[in-house]
Length: 303
Image (cartoon, rainbow, N blue to C red):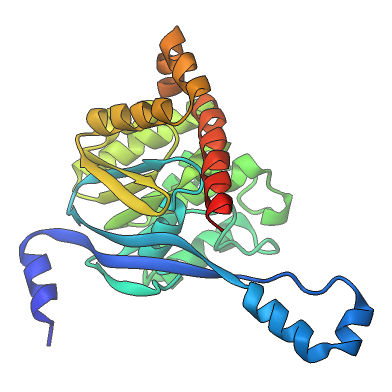
């Protein structure tokens, strides 16, 4: 029998519910560098190694709902926890605490090449993925022509995927994820590998999926795409959810906080680079990497 929270979420049209989710990773300590020390003092060496271990909280106490048919984007600097959160939503990792409820069939486009068998052909990989998602062979075969056409791999679909370039991987991965009837589509930065023309083609198809009621959750550095396509956006910093709301306001808040974090970044924004940052994921990453370094330095000082 469904739980009360599950029934309430379904009645409210919730596709994804995240409640107090945290994810902690254990960092290994530093082993003694000298073999002599380990051999002469094994107990002390083991104790020193054990006590030197620490933990990294990649996601901390995050809660939000994504409604059905929504295009929900997550932005934030490198190391903010957004990709870890997306993996938790996909079920590829388990939260340390909290809970995640997903109401619908999930399709993912996360890591380049994930879910593919390099020795199998492109065609065989389409069939394998479809079967894993619970589709029948007939349903998969019916979708195969448009998957191949969208990916532009007509001449290569029967070649082993180990012969594919990174761009071909992305094109086939997106086509599979988008055309095999997803109810919820999770997309990470993997689209950045493709060329600009294919990226635009992907965004157009994602928008058509949203109009058909598919729920989309996207992690991206492409602020222009976030503002253009999202119905809502969220900003993460150091594993925590800072704000959720209108995409334009969230992007503006992200840039404001970037500017406040460093005089160098503030000067760059004041010199008119903000528009380039909004339109260029590469330019944004440059500033976010500097911010991530400052966060790491601050954490090191705490220790």
